[in-house]
Length: 287
Ligand SMILES: NC(=O)c1ccc[n+]([C@@H]2O[C@H](COP(=O)([O-])OP(=O)(O)OC[C@H]3O[C@@H](n4cnc5c(N)ncnc54)[C@H](OP(=O)(O)O)[C@@H]3O)[C@@H](O)[C@H]2O)c1
Image (tube, protein in one colour):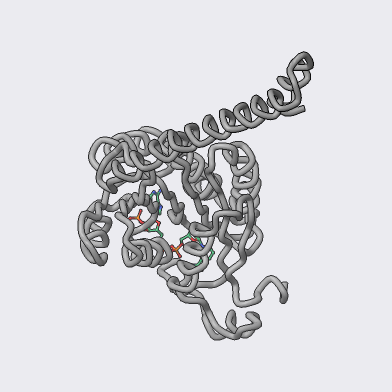
């Protein structure tokens, strides 16, 4: 029952014309209230638009992106694409000089390179605290920091297994947790990068990506995973490429820029979360 019809039911002693007059005026009051509410909403929206400033930590839609592993390979290609599209990028890697040099090589200004070992909680906390103070609110996080020590389990050393898990899985969890502190109030987008072939760290990252996506969806934060196949970077430099390429349906290794395109697609797709996107030249079809 609408508010006006409820009021009319109580007006049974009034004459028909009086009821009509009252009905019209109550209807107008409701419209007036609706218009007033909408105007208040528009004023607030206008104020947020007016206050928007990429360099301001309180900005409503941060275009600040953090890329772990941004100094080389896939992370560097992602950083380049984000910078080209107008984002300010903070690159993280263990080697500070490499991170700084990569930041300086990006198109645009104000990009930053910081040293941060993502497998160390105190490093991650320090880096994100410094980002918050000097750069502002993080709106985008891409986890491209990773190492590869793949070998048969019987030949593997425990320290290598732990190093992979600590960097590729725990590292992404630590940076996600640190970035979420900014994203909770403004929304955001996260893309983790895992491995396409079987690996414990990739399986863990997939489960983590899905459960985090569910946990933070109501705060307008999306979390997805990109799983590359064989990509030309330092990580694959030691492989016998011709042999491997024969097993890939598209017949070649991918380029870091091709993975960056997929990462950017997920960052920019407002209705995709909790998904795994394979960028592998069809490798999964052949496994
Ligand atoms: N290339 C491929 O074919 C391929 C395939 C599937 C998945 N991936 C995944 O894609 C991601 C990127 O691989 P990539 O090929 O671009 O590797 P890459 O060329 O070897 O670059 C790795 C990047 O991660 C950084 N990094 C490594 N450990 C780190 C740590 N503990 N803390 C912070 N930064 C760290 C490196 O910088 P520093 O050394 O200075 O720290 C570097 O910037 C990795 O997760 C990898 O597993 C790659």
